[in-house]
Length: 330
Image 1 (spheres, rainbow, N blue to C red):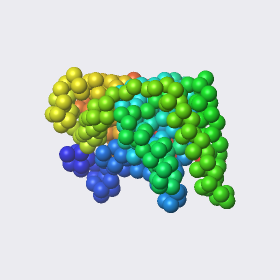
Image 2: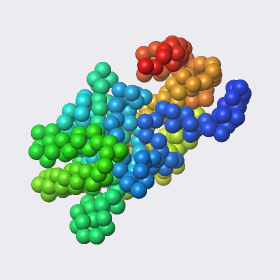
Image 3: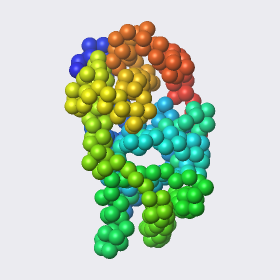
Image 4: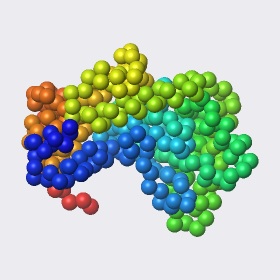
């Protein structure tokens, strides 16, 4: 359906769009690359040592947002600058500078910079428990957490365990894998980080929704977001989402509010606008063609929503993007 619309309005680079449109445009604008099931696609620097350490600069992300995704690895992060709204399955956690967050395996999550004017930076380490030798350590300290009905949680900077985790994460993010003994040093730091996580859990005695409920909500949300990504160029209705995921209208609204903080149509239009921004930057499609290709039936409605989101008209956005692309990079 999407390709046929593109073919109708644009044929200069038809082959490019026919082969790459849905996937490539999404990749261009999404900080996290995912497959059709929203599972993160990670390219490890060293496949024999699957540790992903990164610095997420939200000021450079479209809409200051880290898109919805999940992964089988365990993830721990700390806010180095700014403030974040972190959405994790059932909850939204407000994270300030120095706060930490733990995300369990297979938990759908996303995050958004709280204030567009205050850049947020998060240091993140993501790793599979298999990074540690099989045996008693895995079964005693990792497996129980992964099998718990546990989505994750935030840890305040004022908490002694949180401050230790933040300190170790800063160290591990400053290491380089070219240094001799890098793997050993990382394992030592991850062990200390994980120990602080376990100690915090034992002291706080967290209670969470059942494992079955967590899996159900996660899977429903994955289905609806995947549907949006596949059909954003079509006239999507709430009924389309509820029928695709086999949920009630009220449960659909609750799920979007829990995971994204938005109503379903708000999320759909934001996703469409992100796609439109990518097309304005990277193609020669006319403004009306961009709007039509991204699911906006009316050019005036497209222009209105675009200006509300970005503060400029689509044409002004294209001109500004063109000017920026011509500025030599130092």
